[in-house]
Image (cartoon, rainbow, N blue to C red; front, side):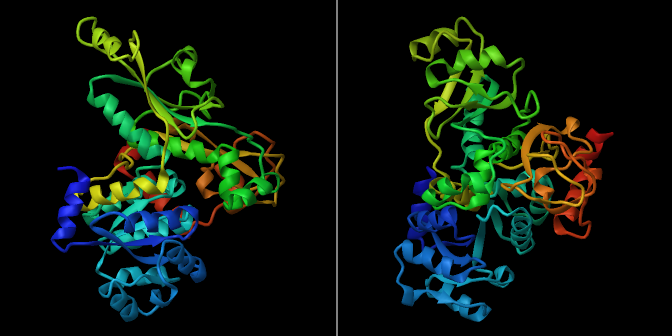
Length: 429
């Protein structure tokens, strides 16, 4: 049975998965609506630090303002869930006391808070779906281990580039081809973009300044490919990847002319890909592969391009929720041994005594590299409000010993635990 038919059967039997969505921004609002369009699941609760934004999200999705329960009282929220009324709170902690909630979707994009959300879900026996590649690229392997120990699913979402590419990678592998590269298609990149330079575009698109800056300076795409790398074992061939300037008609030959190995994550720049992604697969069999693939209009081979012309972010999130609930399986989750890290690179000459301002800020951009090449360097996910103790030149990576990190923070605790995972420790040795 397909996921959709199984969900419909579940709904007919009176079973509904109650979902909490944390974050009521552009993506969170879309997830609320999409969940409510999906049989067998419901947007039961929105957690957002600004309550009105959560209320507005429900209203935008067709709910009446008078029906929305706004409260931090567990009993009131419990009654709202039982009565199938939309509920809003600004307190993440209440999620722990609402046993009807089966899944928590993290949609804030904030690294530290994203880790708090994931831990809250895991510790309270709820599946967690991350629309937060930033947290996953920083401490995902440790969160996945904790979820496994708790018997719940930790997963990134279908719809965003890592999840869409993971499905394509699985497909290419499943039909017996070797994965040459999984490629994220990007239209434009300016590594030195800041919230000031990107402000007019962000205001037109109604997107947050840090998020839009991270899209533009390439940090977001590097983080997405690190998430994919750590879920598949595919690696960046060079720091920051190659970034092949091409278009769909010539993408296969242009990429192969640049890539020196197989099993890569990389990206294209410019071209006519829209919101698409693609995977290159390799297979040699003059009897059972080449003739069939040529007949099916995939080319002469032995390399073949599998292109999906879109990724629909929030629209596919219910598929991941369904896989977690019905099958106990993640769509895309990190392996025990991470293979990629996203390190912080100075956007300009930085002075001792400055504070780094995180992803999508004025001070740093992030670039992916293999874990073995990132030793002693600061992950971009740890750059929020961090004091710099010595100057760093523009375009230089920021060393770990050039910053003062808060060792008491949740992120640092998870990073320390992640570095002690058996597979990570063995790799470092």
